[in-house]
Amino acid sequence: MGRYKLSPGRMKMPMSTTCWLSLVVAIILCWHAADGSTPKRPSSFQFYMRDTLQNKTAPNLNTAFIVGAPNGNLTGFKFGAVVVFDDPLTEGPDLTTKRIGRGQGTYTYDNFYNPGFDALMSFSALIDTHQFNGTINMFGADRLTLPTRDISVVGGTGDFELARGIATITTFVIDGDTFIVRFKLRLYY
Image 1 (cartoon, rainbow, N blue to C red):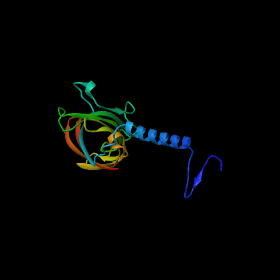
Image 2: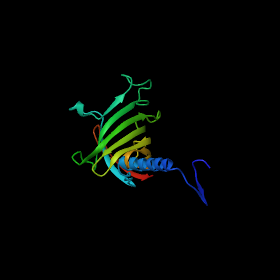
Image 3: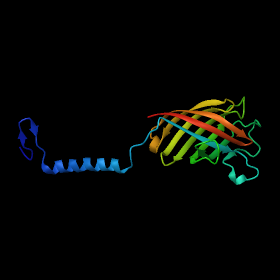
Image 4: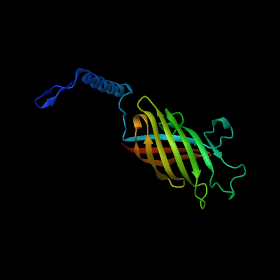
């Protein structure tokens, strides 16, 4: 019967095939273990973001920049303006509290009838702490005049791999052109 010997109720594989299968399984298991530990996947997470639009005394400290035509758009309002930001994320509302990462993304002012008060937010929180490491990606309508609003958590990497959920945003302080907002996240995997 060729290379395979049949015994009652089972078929024997040649030794070389068994060795190769064992080797492949061992490599896959080692590769999975070597890529780091299993994501921690917290069910909730909170941070504060400080967004400075115009620091007139120290312009190099600006963390956001409005992109658009020099004289505004055709309407003369903020409709269509895009704000690109790279903001510090901290554990508390004060800038002296522990920094846990960076918030990077864009706001697009998208309400023609109430310009400057509604924005489409596309945002990644890059978290790097001793406890968690990875990104949390968010997207949604940020109704800036509401004290509390929700946007969608649409993904993540690292310890937040495949995260989904809701980010509740609360405006904590508005100090001139600096906004401090709190993000409370409920995460599902």
